[in-house]
Amino acid sequence: MSSEPRPPGEILLINKPYGWTSFQVVKKIKWVSRAKRVGHAGTLDPLATGMLLVCTEGSTRKIQELQDQEKEYTGTITLGSTTPSYDLETEPNAFFPIDHITEIMIKEKTAAFTGVISQQPPVFSAIKVDGKRAYKLAREGVATEMKSREITIKEFEITGIALPDVHFRVVCSKGTYIRSLAHDFAKALGSGGHLSALCRTRIGEHRLANAVSPKDFEEARKSSIEK
Image (cartoon, rainbow, N blue to C red):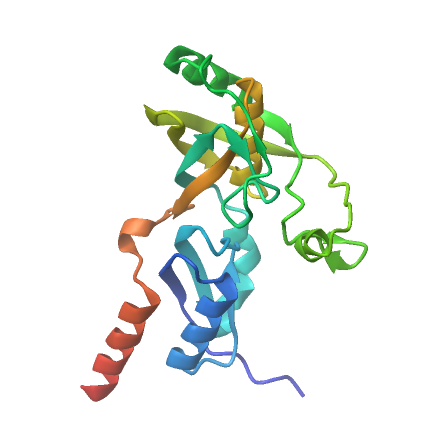
């Protein structure tokens, strides 16, 4: 006897708020929509904002396809200090000079981070190491060696410079860690740096301009029920 087919479901464009985990967004959408199956295509760190594709019911079958699509981000790299997590989740652990860094140098170095490159994920990541999340091991003080992987950065554009901050836009493949890009880019400049802001603006053809916040999604669903 064949199982009952799932409802077709939806692909929802959600603008993830700062401080929310991707799981919190999924939990909220599941509660509001009353869907039995809900998942997201591509995790965003709590300190990142922007596009999170949330799939419900039968549309959850498309999650892998959506995760594989090209992504676009905007953000800020703060030069002069590094953090263990490569972003603001942890406090600075080392400081570096930035007086030698020029705008020309910054813009020229982007070429070395464009195309197919090898990238080492941060230890504060959701990648599993011996069956355990790397970030959990990192928080426990366990030394972990992260294996490098090939990723593709299609575009790396510097959109503004106000040292120590460097603003950028990146178009990249799945599996790219923008935190690692920030860390490696600062190192290439003869300094240190960390990611201080990040927003995902696009996944494939789905753009942030068309997304809604979890709060707006909830209010819209309430309004449609009341009507």
